[in-house]
Length: 250
Image (cartoon, rainbow, N blue to C red; front, side, top):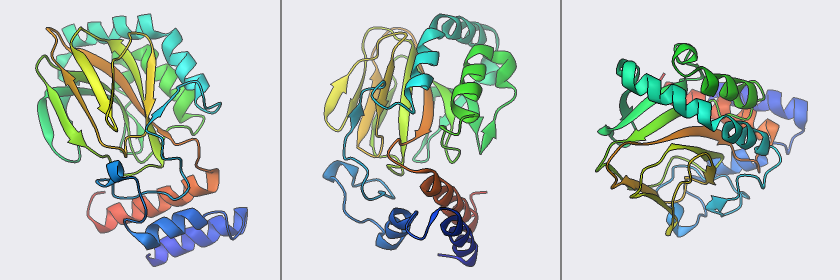
């Protein structure tokens, strides 16, 4: 803990109560802590969050409006994405996963580095609007992470890995899905259904692939895990932001 984190935590406790961020403090003190074997590669595990890999996208009242809005607007989102892919490929870039960089994994960012990517409003306006109204303005999007169109080119594969933590959760809107694509999370393999969402805890080991003949695209949104509280979210933003500064990451 640093003096900056101590000050931020004291302010949160003053507003919400002394025990309001106990789980966050426990996580930071415990290091690796107790975890499911398939979460062994994650950096942080917030205690008390359900060890459930796959979630029903409509099972959490906080997240259901985001799911509903994305699915309702799928057709327009796909049309705008296809137009951007055909005419504005410069808007896409190699995806810079924290583990590696892949040229066969392309990304078009809508939210990154703590803020909306305003250029995306002109490239994919419907997805940008829905994300802003339903996830960003409502505080449901985890600002420590991002939202982007994730395009796997034919033959691409994402190697098995765990993401950084369990206090956010990954929502996928299946935008354009050819045959031969799939994703495995915690040993369970599923396929995307165009126009529908998948929701999973990506602190569990997962991998994905495209064995099809054309690109596979999903819209990925990093949302706060619904089992976290408002004070915990504030504390996590303060702590991770300060840790990243100390590590020279911004």
